[in-house]
Structure formats: structure tokens, C-alpha cells
Length: 430
Image (cartoon, rainbow, N blue to C red):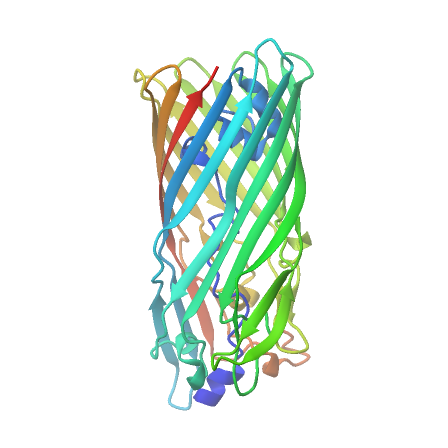
């Protein structure tokens, strides 16, 4: 069994838990999250507008500072099965990671007598991390000395700084532009992006960092009679390569490894409608993974390292409603649907990835303490609605008819749920 598990090459970023919609956050800040992330045509707060449509900040006529922080909890479960001479050997491992912090800081300078509006934002727009303890009862988590991967840990963070400008072409139509500056960090233990040693297994990486740059363009139309329309395009955020310094489990130095992982281009379109006591928002997003470095590649390198995820493009639908019928206590309800970018035949390359969060539900509220200070809060719950699963893949099993190296009788699967509690404060400075 040890030999069989070893040749499976249990690798590939399978140990990464991504944020809700692919590896992008579905929303930013308590207000935007409570609306399911919908804000392209319904700018209820500056954080949602800055994230999804830079033109929409023209809706704000004051200087506003927004500070948000949340605690994100995930409950991934990793299962695997391998064939043996005694029959299938299967096991399950639960994640042991605690809460992750989600920050969001934004500011907008607006004036009702000016056609120009400016903004700046510092958002955590992507992040993941898992901790699967060593487990002798689960093939993928068995010690490396027994042919598994042992304890599996990962951590990824992406912070984005945006500088935003919006111009009112007319009283109804605005255009916006936003250059983005990005910083990301990633560490993996073990590191499947590195070539394994036949005697020492896969190495553990240090925490590598990468810098990125991209931009965003948007249009926002407010009819003045309730209907609002918006469209926005965020370009690919192009990053430098992660340069991993690797060490084998015995403490000896392993060859370095480089991996380039960009953030995908996103096209967003939305419609909003507002009446006296109700605000409605609906967004559709297209996430272009098939043209994104790190995601368009798939399969194995010539040295048995992982080339990339092989993800499909995905769609995200966000919907939200705000009810203002209770004095100084607006209630918000949101729903988010995300398609699964993972091809079942390549599921092994992404197990376990929280990209499988299919349905997310949000409830939030706000309370203005004064004209200058407003408190907002949200609770989120998401579920994968079943498991993402596929065969184990091994470069040693590759043939002309089996290009991915699928191992007969094997399986790896992943499912999870997520919870988030976030609060925010909006300060109207003038």
C-alpha cells in the first residue's frame, strides 16, 4: 500500500482553501457583504462601490471613511480513497484551522457641487488557508514516510490598494477608473509546486511574496427615478512569480521553485432599483480563469511538479435587498450563487479548494448613531452543496489514453461550509 500511495503523487495545490467565489471574495465590508456582494449599480456604501464599480462613487457627496473587520471561519473536510490488494482504503480529515481576519479600509471624497469624486481603498480581496493534521486513517494525510503528505498547511493573502477617480459626464451618467496595486503572500507545506525527491518526498516552502498591478473601468447610470445601471471591468491583476525557498523534512535544502499566479479578470454588470423604503440590487459577474496564469495551465511538469489548476471560467450572481421601514435600523438580506470552476477530471489538482461554495446567504443591518457615524454588521453562511471529487492523478500513470494520469479505483473529494461575522463603522467627515 505504501508503494501505491507513493506513486499517486498526491500533489498540486490540493491543500488550498480559497475564498468563496473561486479565490475572490464575494463582497467587501459589512454593508456590501450583507447585500450578497451586489453593488455594481446600487452603491449603498463606499466599500462596495470601490470594489465593484469605480464610477459608482459619484453617488456620494461627502467625505466618508469606512473601516470594517470580520472573522471568517471555514469547515473543510478532505476525503480520499486508494485501491489496495485488500480492497479500497479510505479516510476523512477535518480542518483544524481557526478564524481568519478580513479587513477593509476605504475613503471617498465627494462634493455635490463638483463633477469629480476621488477614492482610495485597502482591501483584502482574496485569501485562503487550511490545516489538515497528519492522519494515518486517510491516505492523503498519512506521513510522508508512509507515502502520504502528512500534515498539510497552506496560507494565502492578497491585499489590494486602489486609487479611484469618477467623473460625472451628465447628472445621470458617470465614468470611473481605478489603478490597482497588489501584494500577495503564499506558503505551502508540503509544496506540490516543487519537484519531489524519490527519497525525501515533497519539500516545505517558506512564505513567498509577489507584487501585482492591474486596473478597473466602470460606468454608472442613475435615472433619478429609481432605476440604476452599472457595468465594470477589472483587468487581470498581473503578479510577479512566487519564489519559494524549499526545505526537505529532514532539514536539508531542496531546490527552489517558482510559480506565477495572477488574479483573474472580472466583468460585472448590475441593475438597481430604489423606492422610499426598499433598495434592490442584482449583479452578474463573469470570472475569466481560462486566461489567467496559474489557472489556465493544468497537469504535470516534466519533473512531476504541478503546472496549474486547469480551472474553467465561472459565473457569480449576487442579489440583495435593503428594507428601511424601521426607523434608524435598515435590514439587509443577500444571496450569492457561484458556479464551480473545477473540472471533475482535474478535481485532484484543486482539492480541497473552497471555490466550491455554491450558495451563500447573508443577513445584516445598520444603525446611524448620528449624522456622522453609522454602525453596520453582517452574518454570512455558505455551503458547497455537496462534494467536489475526482480520481487521484499520478504522472507515473500517464498514457496516451490517460493524459492526466488518473489512477483507477481512486478518489479524492472535498466539501465545506463557511461562516463570517463582520462589523463596520462609516464616518462622515464633512
